[in-house]
Amino acid sequence: MPQMSPMMWTLLFIFFSSLFLLFNTLNYFNYLPELFSTKTSQTFNKMPSLTWKW
Image 1: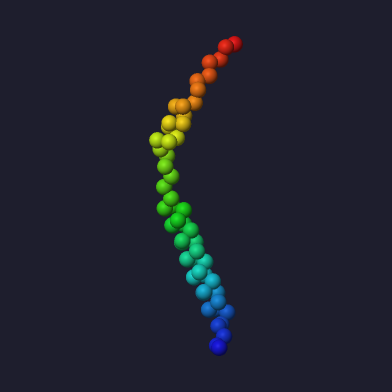
Image 2: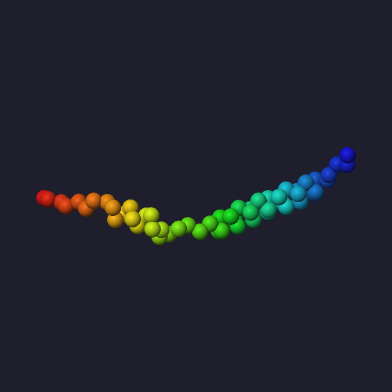
């Protein structure tokens, strides 16, 4: 089996590192959170109102 030169190992490492960073960056910015869903607004309305008597 032929051996790889150190330069090829470095290029291979750079290639896979850049793919890893690209994949993680695309997944991070692809996520869309639900800002205002109906479930969260309904839970806030169901909380009892507190009347403070000082």
